Image (tube, rainbow, N blue to C red):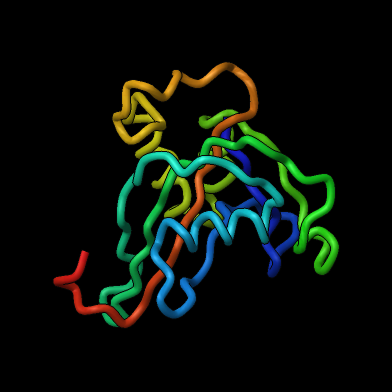
Amino acid sequence: QVLLVSSSRYPDQWIVPGGGMEPEEEPGGAAVREVYEEAGVKGKLGRLLGIFEQNQDRKHRTYVYVLIVTEILEDWEDSVNIGRKREWFKVEDAIKVLQCHKPVHAEYLEKLKLGCSPSNGNSTVPSLPDNNTLFVTAAQTSGLPSTIR
């Protein structure tokens, strides 16, 4: 399953949590921080699903990761400050709710469906049980030369 959060701009719409990187922050660290702030979950960073370029002109690039959730907070920063909600979806259902208003987020999940393991290919990571342990999070950069990946 995939955890989505309500949009801060449009609270009735669901999005993949994520946000910008702080100076000197790595994409994986930013993804973990953003998911903690926006969705109130902690976990183990899994594989990089992909790097998506949304805007060629501004060199806007989004690194999308899988996070295996190990802890779910009852109250978290965005739930207290802006009333953000979170909800678990089956991957197929998440793709449907994202396609109308956030098609690029649906692309992330399409990529997830194609891959078989949420780990980095490390065979010591057990396969996922059928409970709420999977999460997708994104870290965004801008202004990088297109040769940097």
